[in-house]
Image (cartoon, rainbow, N blue to C red; front, side, top):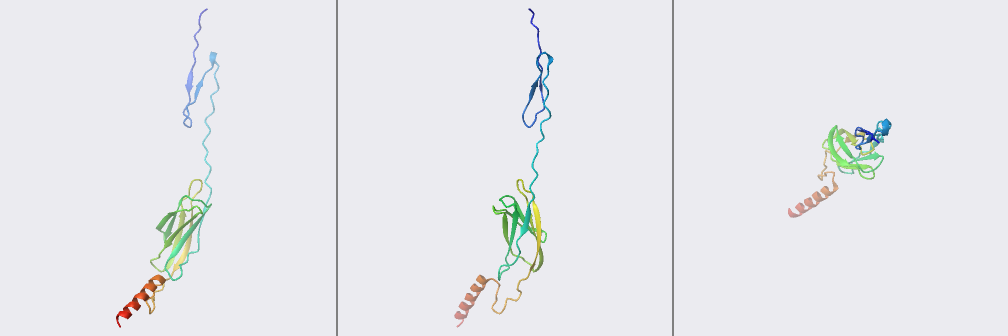
Length: 168
């Protein structure tokens, strides 16, 4: 009895998602069906976010303004960049409650535009908001030399008292 030689062919398909798939043909010319193209990798679209700024007001008797942004959906991650009059002022990370806060000490009086830009984070798109604020500081320090800052005024009053006592 003579031996009949058979041939097997092995074909390699393209690498798909990092895996090498080998296909073989069957015995006596029966071929297995090649698989269809690998499924496309689909990524979920980012969830939209919103960012809001708390009302911007000065702390009593100071020229100190809290810029507080709130990102929704709230979670840690990403950053908020604060701009004043279209110039980057400060960038800070978003906290677990979705807030980002920075103190602003304006150098000039008048109307200012505050912009808060959320960078986005995994699964959440970025967003932007803008608010106007008018800064007015007292230019008349008063007869006692008030600076508008209670702790500084207290120190100045103590120094005046001390100096007055030395002059007697």
